[in-house]
Length: 396
Image (cartoon, rainbow, N blue to C red; front, side, top):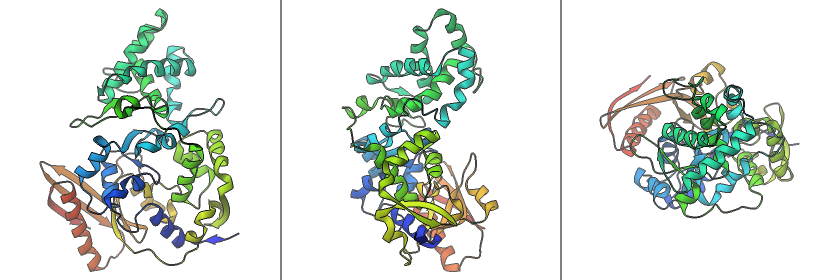
């Protein structure tokens, strides 16, 4: 059994995530298709492409998403909004559909309180939600709150009379003045509806997202891809290998049963390796890359919030100090990460106000003066990418 060193794994992952050097704009679908790009908070996918695409502009990548529609945004793994190539929707959506007996997704487990209050089984409510979401085949709804309310109203029309009052009761989740139990239940179930391409994101309008169906947005049903489930696992293992079944499960946000089924679909393409003191798995086709001791070009990078490279489960590979890990990976309000040679060496934050942007950075180790100058330049480049004026820059 081969042993993979942490430095070699970092180099491989940098290459897999297209962070070893920027690529031409014409390869944007390839870049986004590596493992999808999470878009929370809104705009996160744009920062991710800024780090990966040569001469990247907001206009060019938004054109791919909103006009050419070669890219698509929908709720995908972990129920998160993810941007991926439109022609690979079956990989990033369809493959995530759970089969009978596989248990709930982690992002729908919280619906139990609403189901108990409504006295309705999960499958019944899920089927009603999927039927109501068919409304989006001919409509576009602005804002997530409006979407929840619209679908909840459609479901209520066909509910038994003894359920309607409960459906309209104040929510036990969000603001009870603004959300009903029914709207909260819908909010949970829209994520798995997305896997059937029943709801996707349309073009953002000012500060609000819009929602419609895949077919209404693209003009046809999604293409079916043979072995889409295997392809999803292959991409995960390529980008985060060496890895484990548990890491896949956490990345997906699925039950262990579903994760195991997906894992086994690609198991013939994997081989065991020794990594970080335990047995992990990597694609056989990645063996040479993972055993390559030569370094990637040591790029200094400003990774944005929820950049795909940071979405690994073995965080110690890029940041060993657990106390510092808590500053990078938080429950809410994550900062960006300063990456040097594949390792996280600090964090950065921005604040935009009236056409200007403030950038603050915190480095944890002594950094050569030349790299500090590079960070100033990167901050200026990022401000220009956002069409903002760099007002204040702080480096501590």
